[in-house]
Image (tube, rainbow, N blue to C red; front, side, top):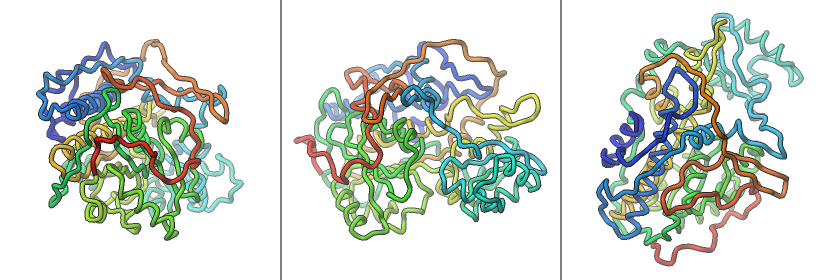
Length: 469
């Protein structure tokens, strides 16, 4: 396998020889001048390796050597399908409305910008920034942007709640203070919580479910975080996603990443709901957040606060720009990071119009790598009792991708797309087949098509009798 897996193993202090336990039957058909196929294959391989390793440890092999970990294989077409899940998704035969009309590239007075307005509140903020009425057309938005500087729009958007990035060249991004802060950051960060070494064994696990009995509180949205928690659910964890009832998720987006999870609504600004969340935390093994680094601190959900109240907790965090640097608190999405970092310019067409990776690969790879890091942390907690904090960012993944050699773009050849159909209360859902199966483990999602916000904010009754907290 490639550089990305080796970097993950190094930064997470896992055995480097584990990279030799991976076999890929061919190149992943994702066309780009950047090695995005390698990134996709390596991030999924990391997830499969860490699930296999955790499974061994929960099967009473306390300190397995690399050659004791079962080999994991990855079918290129499954990897490509998993990364293109939003493109393959169908609801009653219709494709997902993945991009809102005001999300995309627009020419500014001195270059290009990329906007993200998929959520209604982001669209409203964009129109307000441009001083346009709610009925203004896409053409009116384009005209307003064309009269403004890209960098001015980027900065004003940050202050107003809109989401806009100037399209930079890779060299311009390398000199940016945020990019400089990323150079010093690991690809993935695993930090042990000091001072706690109590009993937090996960107990033994069913041979088909490495994460049996593990409880995961999912505080994520969009793609990267939900992909991480979907992966944990796939391996048997009880994943409960919590959202604010005033911030509805896009229905298709939840269906595309909500397989195997339950979904409940809590308003953390309302004390009874905040108290209910604290009760859930008491019995949680993992908390995963996908918001800006300090945005949940007001609810007592900082890593320090969580570890103090709930020793042994594993905290996973995914952010757009990283945990430090001048842009740490800025809003960002995969498409926005691609624009800012130079990836969009690398994919520009013959007219100079910026382009994009063939999939939202920063999101998906960050999600799978975060799941892998969380399982690595759970294994260590099982052995030593310590809590952990695991961090990854889309911008750091972009930094690693851009650091690899470029090559002429070749079109991906035809390949068989594997999807899964499910009949739900709201019709037929078609989604990409899972790509993270391991030997002796699950090979399908436990369920597909559960409704957003339809569950009670409580853990499933079943919990491994042999597990401890």
